[in-house]
Image 1 (tube, rainbow, N blue to C red):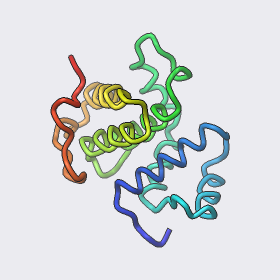
Image 2 (cartoon, helix red, strand yellow):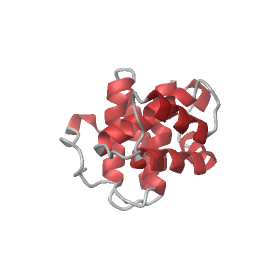
Image 3 (cartoon, rainbow, N blue to C red):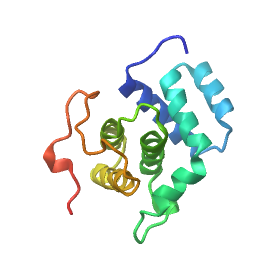
Length: 158
């Protein structure tokens, strides 16, 4: 983990590890070791921090997601969407950086890249709901770390 990646790439690589973990229940240390051996999508220190935030608080993160699913269960969610939500909620709630707008926007971008066509709206809505319900300050602020802010059309319909 010598090289630090741009945060977007670090999040994406952490997401790929978390997504792969949905197919094979391995401890985090094994996943990280395997990731380092593969070398394809290396997880840097920030990516590892994100994964540890999820793994250290997985029950709480899953409860926060599950509580906001209307007429759905976690088992019905696509693996991509669930992995994005888990990483996003973990960053939103447990990150020491306190940049919730960035966490939500980056989760939306991952969902756009890897999920089905409209999944990003669901991800945006659920993460926004978590931020509002937990009174996380700054969740409504425009992200400053990404290339461009999300267009107005991407906000969920009320």
